Amino acid sequence: MKLVRRTALGAAFGLMLCGGAWAAGPAPVAVVMTTDAGVVELELYPAKAPVTTANFLRYVDEGRYAGAQFYRVVRAGTDPNPNAPIQVIQGGIDSDAHRGQMLAPIAHETTGQTGISHTDGVISMARDGPGTATSEFFITLGDNASLDQGGKRNPDGAGYAAFGRVTKGMDVVRVIQAMPSDAPTPEPIVRGQILEKPVQILSVKRK
Image (tube, rainbow, N blue to C red; front, side, top):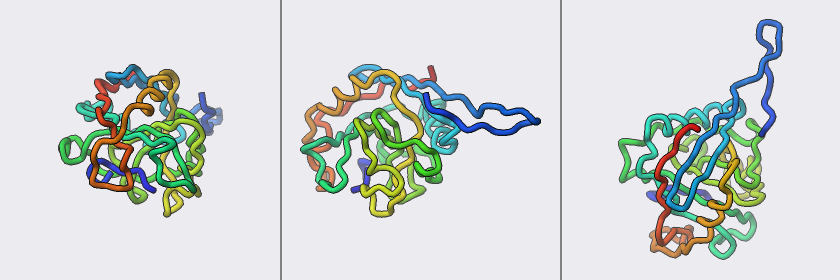
C-alpha cells in the first residue's frame, strides 16, 4: 500500500575533503512543529538527504504549511496490509485546497542513499511513484523497515524518503495516532485511517 495524499493521497554525517582538511557537512537543522495537540521538535539532516530536506525547509521558510493538518493515522486495526504493516501519522496540505502553496515534485532520495532507516520517530515524505513527493510527510512509530528501500510496503521497492527524526514530542505523536479515525473517505485503501477531527498544524518554524 502506498501512502497517499488526501486528493489521491544525533546521526553521524559524512565528511568531505576541503583544502586538504576534513570538514563536516551541513549541520542538522532543528524545526519546531506546533499543533493543537502539542509540540513536536524535529532534527533534519541536510548532509544525508539534501534534496528532501531543502524541499521541506522551503515549505517551512516560505510559510507554505499554513493550513496544514495531520489527518491520517495507520496503526494495528486500521492497516489492511498484513504482510508489511506500518505505524505512522501523516500530514501536509491538501493539493486542491492549497494548490497555490504546492511546489514542484522532487527527486526521490532512497534510504539506501541517505542511510536513514524508518525507525521510531523518523520523518519521511509521502509519495505516489518515485519522484512525486511534494508537501505530504509522515512520522513513524516503532520500526517500519518495510518503508525502506527494498521494503515490501510499496510495489516499486524504492521505499520512502526519510530526512530527519523527532527529538522531542513523541508523546504527542502517539496521542495523535490513537485519535478516533473513521471519517468517510472515497478510498477503500485508507478506510478507517482518516481522523474524525484532523489535528491542526499551527506553525512549523526553524528553532
